[in-house]
Image 1 (cartoon, one colour):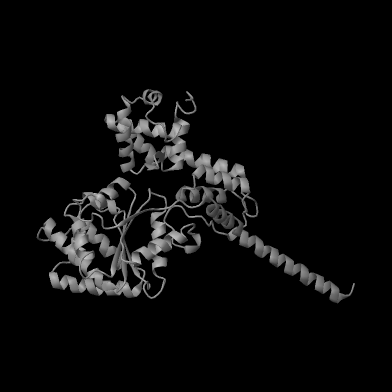
Image 2: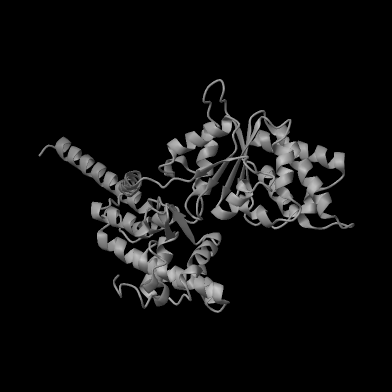
Length: 421
């Protein structure tokens, strides 16, 4: 064989080896594409909310405030990330791009805490120009009314402040926000936390952000406790009565979720079998966080280049359900079961929902079987669980929000799959 042919063969073989090595390294270096321990902010990983984001964005740009309800861990914060991107788009002459400020109220228990949350949201805002504008506004505000936001936030003051003084400081702070942009949406995440906050923060919000001079500002209130959020907006004695259109965070379509999962597995060289994908969504009921979590586990348990199989999903799901034994849910049940009759009834109702589903809950056999003294106890108990964010009701059917918690309850129940109706 001519030397040139041999050299060509060697070159071709070397190139194939280099290519194969590159492919192997790529497979080994692939990152798990699923995220479940925090809200998503990558638009490529947010699925099934495009049309709803546009609807809410146009509603807000039309100067209508929106209250958005969704049980915890179902994607509200992720949705607000997508909504902020949609609000930043130009939708025409009457709907230009809007700036967005997101204020997380999850841990607010006082007006100083509220002030601190607003300060944190603005001082860490991703837009440099808006962040610097906020800093200038705060500096001017502190000189004008003589208070230091950082001091109030840290609860360190040589002279004690009253709740009324703190409310005035919050009002001034919120009014100053109106100057940040000619087109502004303020998102109050976990808004229901303000329901029991002293100092009448709802009246402060109405006066500062919903009065004369604030026509360029729209508000989005999100909440995971539907009854509390509705009370804040539907009770005529409340400052925000009738001031927001109420919307429910939609469920992600099954086909959209399937296509998203299929693409993410395939793109990282771990293609998923159709049966595995279908079963994965069946187990999670398309719950956003739990679907991402189970997919994450399945991806980790699958070798590069190998398919995600049905048994992989079953095993990963079993492992995740067992972790509930060491979770906040287990600790909460232990606390409830040692409480008063109302709290013990909450445990009974959770077990009944897990075993039987959310219909015909007041039938006489079920009432006796699960230890309720009467059927009249069931509805108040369900409402208490709803206020805790553990269950939800849709069209007359109650359900446990977290599918893994529900499965753990069912597996540990001595009454599951017994006594058929």
